[in-house]
Structures are given as structure tokens and as C-alpha cells.
Image 1 (cartoon, one colour):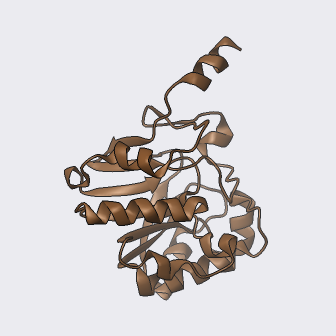
Image 2: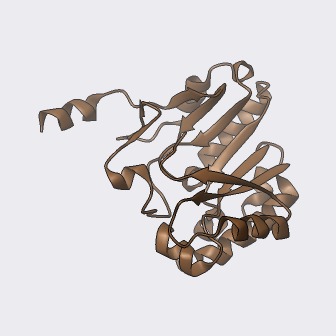
Length: 209
């Protein structure tokens, strides 16, 4: 109990650096409940950074956590949660960072923002988001629901629709899938990426960050 109290009062990690990129820890809330996510396996750390948030950072705190965006090759909205649940805050930070000369801004996302917000949000990303990394994670809805456990119905087709729409407004769109999950066909996932006209990246199970 004492440890929990100490953690509760610890300063949250809002920004963390990996591979010459600055990552922003936007929220711990998510649209999915992925069985392979570290936080559902009782760890809140990524590459040694404790990412549990007891209070979500403000726009100003996220900007402060970046500092001069020109110091990094990219700023990435990420963390152990879904950044687009705070879409207005993310886009506000992104616009201000672009105005300060950020070379590139990326969102790591589950691709369900349009489903969650009830509208096509991808046009709002034009001009401020340079790249999207979208977690496809499976070659079909059955396998996706098995591993990602979405809270909303129709998540898998909504994800595919999001990727198709995003291509028009975001210069670089990549979908990813985790190699090592039972039933996930990486070759089929890569084929879906080609059909969608976007890039593909294979991720490794249990390797985060």
C-alpha cells in the first residue's frame, strides 16, 4: 500500500526519448483491451520509462515535455493508451509543434478514431500529422477481436476505412502487426497493407519501444 501511495505522487512521465524521437505519453485510456499489451500484463514500463498516468497531461505539459522539436527527428504521440481519444489536444500540440519547426509528427494509433468520434477525423490531421502507424494486428475480424478485444462493435472494418481515408490527408501511413500471436498471418497482413496502398511493419511480440 505504501508503494502505491508513493507511485501516486510520483511525477508522471509525459515525454520520453527513444531512437532520437521524442514520445508523448498522452493517455492510459484505450479503445482496445489487447491481451498482449504490457499494462494488461501488470507492467507500465516501456524501455525503463514508467508510463502510468494518474492525471492526463495538458497541452502545455506536452509542449513543455518536447521543448525544441527540432532537437528530434520526430515527435510521436504514443504511450500505453490510444492518443486519439484526446484528439483535440493531440492536434493542438501537433499544430504548435509544426509551427515551431518540428521535422515530423507521428501518431501511433489503433485506427479507431473515426469510429469513436462518430465522424471521419482524418481531414483534421492534414497539415499537422506527417505519419500514422496503425495497429492492424490481424488479417480478419475474428482474429482481431480475439487478440485486441475492442470495446466497440465493427472495429475491424472501421480500422480499414480509417486507413483508406487517412491516405488522402497524411503523407505516410503504415500498418503494423505483431508476429508471434496465435493465428495471426503476417504475410496476409502485409497483403492487406498492399491492397490499402500503405506501408507495412512487422512488430515482434513482447518487444515494445
